[in-house]
Image 1 (cartoon, rainbow, N blue to C red):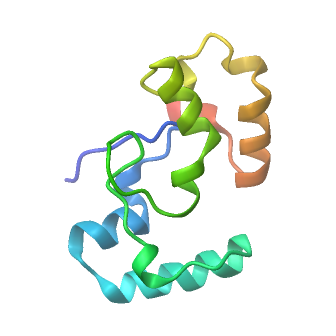
Image 2 (tube, rainbow, N blue to C red; image 1 turned 120 degrees about the horizontal axis):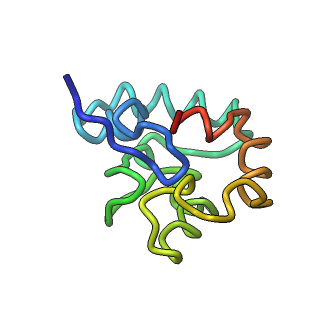
Length: 110
């Protein structure tokens, strides 16, 4: 069983195709993920950009994770993840992120 690697938002990086593609050096998964993300996020990813070491680890980060405001905030506050912040309930950055991503971060920490 693969260990969980929590992102700043609470997602499990080990289930992310960019993380898996890097870990397994899977060019087919990179191409498929770039294609899917380009449609889903109206983006322009190339297959070679689909590589990630995990959100809170130093190194290569793919797509949105590279510029994620949640990740940046957690790092600036030196927190393990967003849910640990005392401002979590009222945080506008979190609310915008959740709306854009179509998820509820609280669900990852329940």
